[in-house]
Image 1 (spheres, one colour):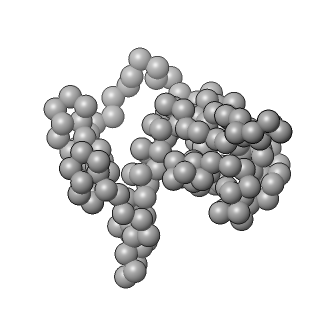
Image 2 (cartoon, rainbow, N blue to C red):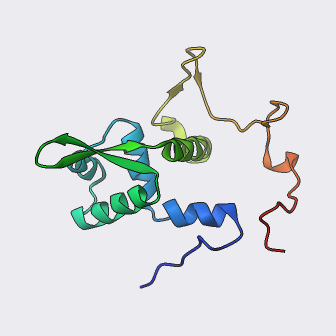
Image 3 (cartoon, rainbow, N blue to C red):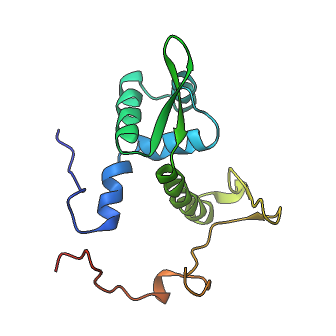
Length: 150
């Protein structure tokens, strides 16, 4: 089955899905961010097939989200986030906040986030890049941008 390509749509959400819309990709990024960087370790953590993991890693490297760095002479590689990948992890942190709020149940969130700057446990909250105030869905208007289709 051919996967729908969203990269050509005049929509930043669709273009992002073109990079990480396959269900394993966000979990691979999460693992690499958490320090699980070698192929066999990622595979063991996720229980993913070698074929699918190879395809996903190749795609994420091609998209500039991950980079391969050799760790011995065989060659064997570790995967590291690029600046583009770090930006995607920030989006994943927002997804985790939603999951913690709506899906964690009585057990609570599976992971806590300690902020380096203040040392406190917190959560991601989008803020306006201009004034610093919180930005929520009902606080913004959507306007056509310079790259809009119409």
